[in-house]
Image (cartoon, rainbow, N blue to C red):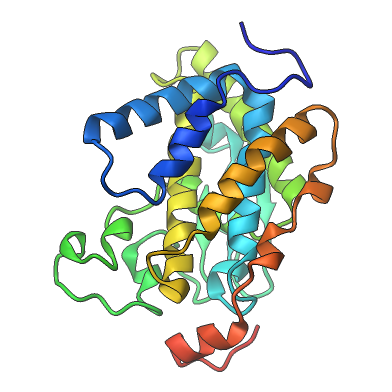
Length: 268
């Protein structure tokens, strides 16, 4: 039975295992599959807690990037009906927008870069990392972004630069519509599984982006993840997620690092 409102999440050790997988490359492949499966079920059981946890992790990771990193200035859109059923909504009230002064708003679920193109391919990492092989899946520095992001995952990366309360609301509405689609047998996955796939991809790409600056041994994402287990407990018990945020600013990378690695002089 799922815990009631305000109660600690059920089986939080499953979340801790997932966080360990962010930085441990030697996990058995069957263990990774089990972690993903368990996390989908975990979100189904602990929906409100999971929304707070994911919102906190996403925003802290995004806000730790340099303020002039273009990933922090994208526009994003989540069409709730499209996410749930695959059919875009004509009703603008079914669309959640992350607007940007530098990028146009997408017409469908997804994100648009400051250059005006869809976000979510390996090209978006190439401004900081020069691919070392024609097959990026064989390149240690680029393999994590070899598979394109789904439109929802791309949108979550864009939304992650917003404040944690907004991202919490966005994730909550998205999960609700995924749940309704599952109840109506419109989608084969559970709502938790669908949310985990999108959010975990967004988190993985944000971790990869940080590592372009810090190197592969960056422990900050694990600190963020483990911290948000307790933070999500407090938010689920009625605490303010805005108060719990802020690790991203504490672990922020200097804007000079973006200028140095990219050769850009645009500080947005």
